Length: 343
Length: 175
Image 1 (cartoon, rainbow over the protein chains, first blue to last red):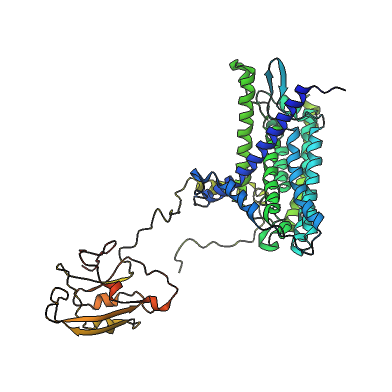
Image 2 (image 1 turned 45 degrees about the vertical axis):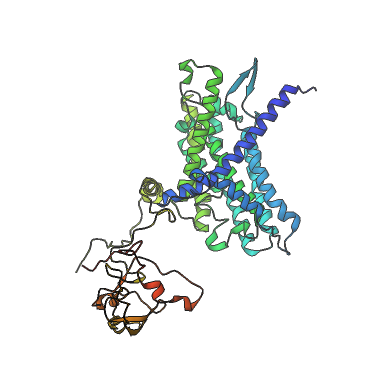
């Protein structure tokens, strides 16, 4: 089979763009995190590096690279390096199936703003996110440190528990959409028929589980600096620590993108077709609107982090197994009966 | 007797379903943090902005001169006597002929030392002084590596010549 050069070029550009955008957004999420935390606590936050402190992420990055790289002598060196690499890799992989925008018409050819439109995109995201737990697990285990191990065990059991509820909440969504392709899901929500209207409970469960999957407060038990020093990344230093922290922010970005695509219409601006604008312009506006939604979700992540204290571990497990999973099952039943009654 | 209405009676009642859901409580908590987003920030950008000293701030001492640039201090020793930390050392001397432009009265302090490590900046020396000579200013006593550097002699205490008041911050608050 011959692969046309234009196709390769187009995909390469999109891959590089998605990769760059996720890295840049993750970079500025660290800045936003500090700024938001400061503002919520009546402080100002970073404002020295560059105007408004906008160069702060660059300074942080340089600092991470200049720090001494320490690998504990009792650690398993191969796994110790593999952990953060895996965490970073899986975080970046997820962006491939998310539709960042509608289509662009360039010289008569139609270019979808998506790396690949897998017909099982939803499953792909779940698969990759599940691999993400290995990054934490391997890193914590390879450190040969009891705090790291505790953090890693907590992380893996937490992520596994909440993945179930997350999957169940998505099943209800898929029952209404009838497709596992994320582009199909987004296309069905055109003109304000956003899934949040039909699946409010599903969205709520999905959001709570996304918080847990990203190891964000109130579910940041794996790091839990009060009890576990730093959790799974206690022994990490320099850019390997940076990769762990960075992958958390990329995960946050991707979860925000997934949430806005699944429940808030993705790149859909309601009734923009009525304005009769050029198709390319509509696409670009839609992508901008998609990123606006993503930024709002990232802000929500941070807002919650600086409001709520973290759960105790048994509370976390109670919430996951005894509340979230039954709720998700009830949601499936409700959705099923709703489909039977109204369609 | 009840002084304020702030105390809350603890009741061991079962929570209602709304309360057990925690979601309304979480939302109200998040609204509180959100309201702080728009509040005035407490930060003072230090090197550029400096917090104003209180009007009655007591910092480093100054030995005043009068309008003609003569030292007010007559080495009466009342400040040293009043000092609860015994930080002040004075040696008096008699004014020679030709020194009238330096010292206001016939007696002056040839040595006036304040040990800033002992000083508690209570301001009693200032209150004791009958000659309007010693004041506490808004200036800070800087840190040093050496104990000897904290014994401030006349070189550091006397108001510089040609200044009507302390160059930066001198504000007499005793009216």
